Length: 325
Image (tube, rainbow, N blue to C red; front, top):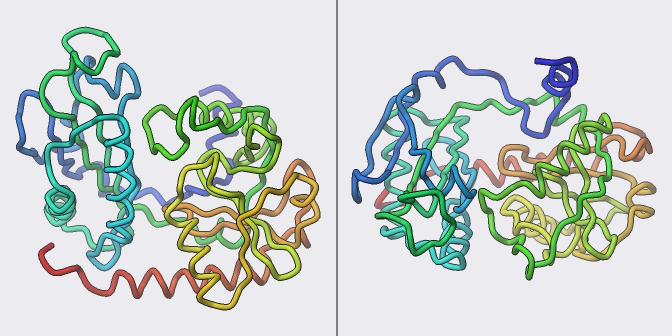
């Protein structure tokens, strides 16, 4: 590792978590050609996909990050909506129903005897190719599906201390270029932004839309608080975030004014508070943006309140596993 890599590894992140030795021995569920329609539970050290897989060669596929708490997959229906919507748009036929896929995720976590603090990466690619080539018609067999369940205790310190953002030149794209509603493996737009943010000394990148208004961060969604109101960008140029939507809905349910509106960096710099949201992140305060201190530079009362509201919502939604799973 060079000095820059070492610095990046020690910077705070919205995805900070405590390392868990148990993750080295997890079983990973895989459906790969030529195993056909059956999933296999494979030890982590033996889990492999072909170099001719569409996901490896082309980033051709979709993914979801899902949390398991109290043995229950949180917001699983919303994650399935987004996965199947993206795959249909990309003409990837998974070859199994939503309920069958949910049952396989539970089979994997149950086999690992996992119940709490589990972050699951569900990955789908178009499948195996006979040779390096992008055309979907050359795919052999069914799509590749991989389920990776890891124990990840998110950092409480980051949720209190917060992170720093830097606005970058890489923009969120229009849907006629690559639809930002797809949670696709092709993440170079966000990765480029992430690199620019890290080089600028920030923990994450703040990205603008094609018109110069604030859009989102490279791996989380962005909110500001102004005079008791919660603002976030419209969904035109961003991934339709599940935690983002939960925060919007919880604001409505708890009498907090929330607006999905276009706003510029000027409104960001003068905001009372700012925070980001994500499946792994939850709600993380933002203390500085482009060298400007936000509010008093600490977690504000609105962010703290929303963290509490969201925690109660999360626990209520994961109180009992749905019948049939």
